[in-house]
Image (cartoon, rainbow, N blue to C red; front, top):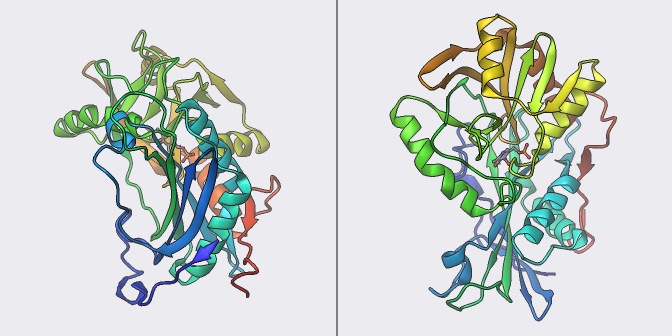
Length: 356
Ligand SMILES: Cc1ncc(COP(=O)(O)O)c(C=O)c1O
């Protein structure tokens, strides 16, 4: 892999006590191109603009996928990734669904190990902070016409993120818009899913809500997920989350939370969950917790849910012991405080080409 280092690092200009999410990018990025049936020209270069033609297929027909994962500094000052194998697996599930080439795990790991080692100084080491890693792939044929591209560009960019103090979110259960339907592309982390959510979110925000709670596309009855998080409820002592059905993104935090809570002795049900059941549980006082899960905040509590004009206040976040337990367990495993019994944490390996 060819490595071109920056001449002048931007690091000194970053205020590590105040890092706005998604706006600060580390010095280097990884780029590779897929052409003639193989990945080639893998390189690390200074972070910067990419050149593409206006006929670039991704811009027109949306063949574009991404991932979002994090690297952390542990209490013993080691740089580690969290569940990186699952993110590679999901990237390739997205690639297959969008008719794109898969990324070999070895290329991915070489790229990310080199990138994180080169930009190690960009990794915040305060608890709760992390280095966000954003892999992305897009179709790069210069062609107008609907067909899979022959050429693709794969990029990995990174950026520091501060601790994420998410305030409880107010949700509108949409009976007007859907995020994804069975048979569609909801299970892929593809750009169009996020574009499809924007109008619904914007309208909900104008009404004072933070995010949409997405329902199934057929009956607008079964809960799918919220904003860009999976959703969990605690009903009468049982943890319930919608079963993934082809339309719901298979969240890696979701799976981690399920494994942790089962391990801690909770009964966890993955099943169809209707909004009517939530309304009934709320009315009868057995709805004990509501929270979303995702890489960004691990767990975000839900303040209220409104469905067809009926507003339900959710239990206070400080009383959500199941959600708080899931959150602290994941954070402690990442920080190296709690035993990593499932081998979710993987050390960043310093590539020989860079040296220790
Ligand atoms: C639509 C959607 N649902 C759920 C999630 C949560 O997934 P994860 O826990 O893997 O971050 C994300 C974030 O990646 C998302 O974009």
